[in-house]
Length: 114
Image (tube, rainbow, N blue to C red; front, side, top):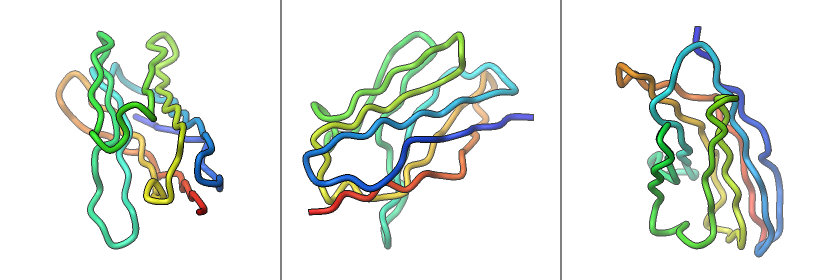
């Protein structure tokens, strides 16, 4: 059974930093990443990283957010710096297994105050 456990969300002032973590278990994952959903908006990609270390990120977070992965621990991290109020959202961990099946965490709330 696949499980994704997220941690690290919270309240931070604009310009501050947070680090999200997501530990996955129950399968081998070809890629892991983070998506977010702000109130009234659709869920959007933040950043992903493959088992080989290739990364992809949204233009809106380039230069501010860094995704990394500890494959031995099946854990993905999202270091978020220079946070802006528009980064406020529920952040969801995603993991894709070798059969392209997607799994989601329950989400962790990030609130950036101005």
